[in-house]
Length: 139
Image (cartoon, rainbow, N blue to C red; front, side, top):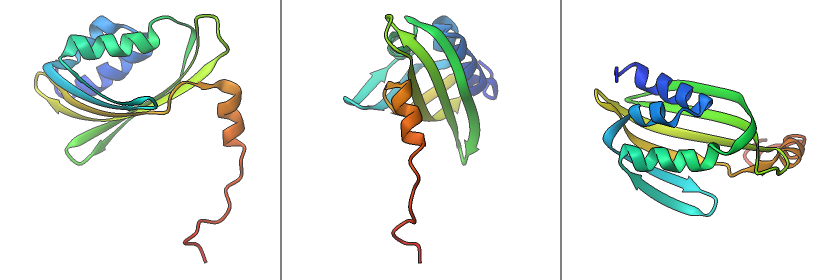
């Protein structure tokens, strides 16, 4: 995997739910630290990490990519994605994940991920409608 293309291929594979290509974006001994609503997890190895992502997204129907983004942050890459989907006939949900990744010549070697959880679409939209007051530090 080309050093520069691994993050873009990662986002593309995730957006198309091509988990074979997704695994190829990862270094063989990649490690993922996942901060999830139920609690933290650590996954090691490209196949184990790919299976975890596949478990989240493979059975979704009406799958829609709302946003993906890649930004260089010092020596790391910040990757983010937001999807809209329905799982197992349930109402639509929104999920957003942000990951800081390390890239080596053999692929993405480290993933540090924060997940919003799967939020019902109407709850996600309602939470965006709340107006924020001034911050505590504002004068």
